[in-house]
Length: 295
Image (cartoon, rainbow, N blue to C red; front, side, top):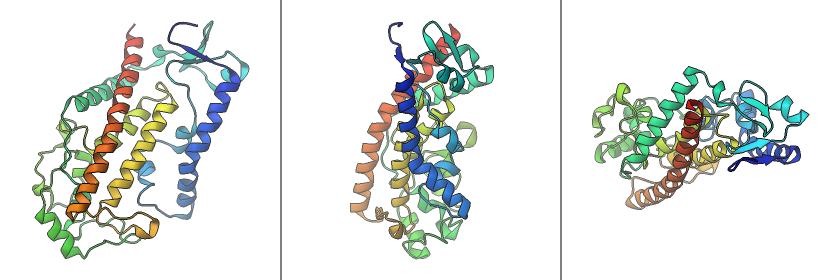
């Protein structure tokens, strides 16, 4: 076997594929059941509604980038061209199968990931974005299943009393129109990635976006690590928001208090530290794909 490459037997990869499907279905099965009933979960469904990566693809296992599969009938039937190719070294990915459009997408992902990694982390937003979204009673998205924790007037007063410093355009664009001028970070669509920074929970949640953008080339283990981090970030995001999710088992992080802001920042920093590691892994994985194709 070539240095740096691992060969998985048929039994090994089949076992891992089953284990992967089981762990992913912990999230995808309830999502499908809710969707069939017409129900919505304000925390977990975000990972499937906002991030348009099909549940079936998330469930489908692919080997890590450094792994090849024993050339068996089972592997040939499941891991097919154009992505996979069989050789004397087993069955592995063929980077030459990338189209110019796919290569451009990976180049873009790599630029965003590297630029975000290079910027200093900021931890002073305290999750104010969800409050700014409902300022003035604008688009209270979860009102039917999760009412506001505070009266609208108190929500508005809190937004007006605190600095709003959102650095993520895809959160900012959902602000109530009256709240957008309050944001201290100038954000526009054309330069939306220029303010991405590694302390932002949304930039870190988007590691899942960049991971599935790079599938199946990076492998399911890294994709899953980014997904599970995104789940924890989404939980904190909604716990710190203005909605009352106690009935669903999510105790509020009361950022309207100094104690709540301390808790939010502590958890934000902890999750950011994990994101730093995953971002570096993603950069290495995507870079290897791009370089391999160039060769």
